[in-house]
Image (cartoon, rainbow, N blue to C red; front, top):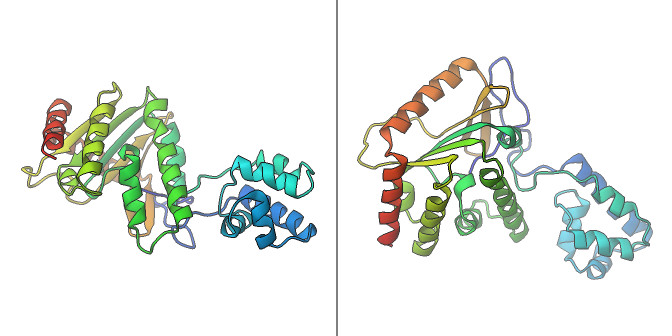
Length: 290
């Protein structure tokens, strides 16, 4: 799962949630594009209700785009250009759009570091990490989130999560290590079919040379992860960062002493978990029992 802050307090080595909470923030380019759409629409004397049928999107989608909260589809840009005089302004503005839609504001700093990392370590005891989730598993999480999300927000967050997962296949020289509590599979989030698909997905991912998946068995009563999840990464400059996420907040960690403690705990967790081969065997047995 996981999501991050744009600001980092270098003195303390941590960063807190951005003002306004965890909802995805509009980028300057999205706001600018939306303002251009609105200005051209109003210049043409069209209300959102009038404009929506012309571009074949709902008035709510039009509002989200004009307010900079949604990345416009290419079809929207094409149809809006035609409906608003073919000035070329929208096509040119669309070339400069940038945003990580569906990512909470406090997560984006981590996401940028994650995209360049040469090493990524993750221990999770609450839910399957976002990089490993299937579409069905992720959708289950988003559809049951409180407060409830709109269909558009569910789709945006799901798309962002699936796009992040390209890291696993697009960075074959990055070393990925995951330690997962066994109870994450026993809970059967989304039901038996979703869990069966998830187990097969993890078995496939774990066969890659650069991806190691280990299961921390229930029989391991006391372990080094009792203080909660751990996320660590190493940049190409060999600098280490950590990440900690709570309720509607996230914290980027750069203080060397704290990183050292997290590395010590993660190393212990890897020794306490099943080997990757034995973990694969356990996942196979769990899948067979469903």
